[in-house]
Image (cartoon, rainbow, N blue to C red; front, side):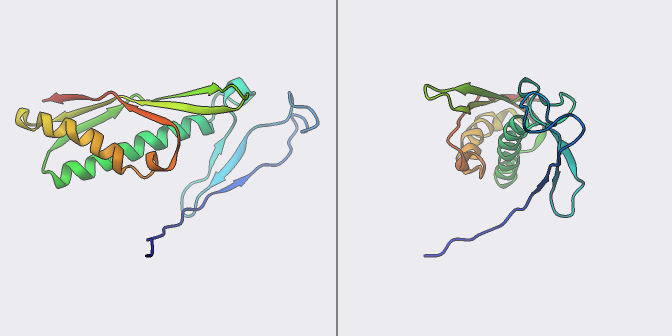
Length: 157
């Protein structure tokens, strides 16, 4: 039995800069370039608490954003198939990084807080049910061990 396979590519580039060397954890630069084919390059850094540049995106933020984005895109597709008109979708997602008993740091939980504006009151229950269905079908959620919690709010407007 075969599987459908899609490939996604990213190139990271880091070089020693004027800040310092990797011989000193406190001084080497954390900024690096991320390039994905046919898209603008993005300069990233470590999170500020790991001596990164607070004005740059960091992996923890983008991990959280990728889960929230995949959830939203899956939700919108399911809403389209269910003929539910969505006027707006916002999510104030939060990733929680902890240190476990073995001193390993990992994002243990991502809380998604989608606010979904729909047009018809009679679609409210269906729209709410699609949140869980979207979670089960989200490619990124299915790829990580992180607990993902949905706290949805359906608004009719």
